[in-house]
Image 1 (cartoon, rainbow, N blue to C red):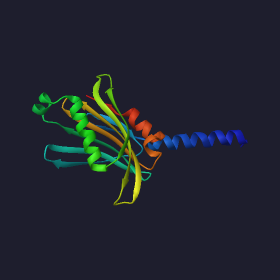
Image 2 (cartoon, rainbow, N blue to C red; image 1 turned 120 degrees about the vertical axis):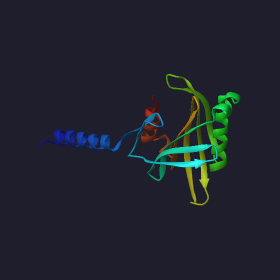
Image 3 (tube, rainbow, N blue to C red; image 1 turned 60 degrees about the horizontal axis):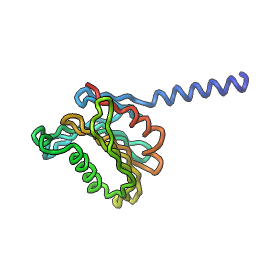
Image 4 (cartoon, one colour; image 1 turned 45 degrees about the vertical axis):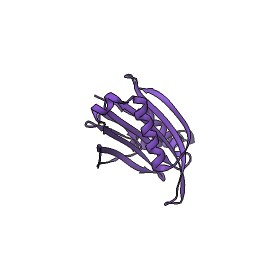
Amino acid sequence: MRPSLAIAVIAIACTCLAAQEVKTYESKAGKFKADFPKTPMVSSKKIDEGELNIASIDFKGGGFIVIYSDLNADKLKTTKPKDILAGGEKGLIEGFKPKITSTKDIEFGKQKYPGRQIAGEAYLAEEGISINLRLTLILADNRLYQVFVFGPKDLPNGKEAEKFFETFEITK
């Protein structure tokens, strides 16, 4: 086999293997889909206000997570979307104690749902490690989505994370 042909075959094989690793996950109940680097585990957790529904993977010393929860419709009538998103950011700060490096209000998708993108750095004392994190909060009607990547320095902005965030979509 000629060297250039061998290189082409290897490149095609690597591309096919890489393409096989990405798993498009679609939640009919959650009304979303996203390309995870591998098939996510799905769980739910009861909380005072209802239930957190979680699709997550461990990946390269970090994680990729989509969490969604339905908010009380009466509360939404008296609370501005920006305040709900600010509350989500506050929860992140209380949970991880990160140094926020950026925060930006956005409109998400064709429907222009209110959202917020947050990036930060945190030290997890129990594990003795520093992580970087990237989170997008989206309020779609009465559902709050949290699209989250955390891990070593380059993971939240790496190619897998970019694909994860780019492919996250709210479905019908």
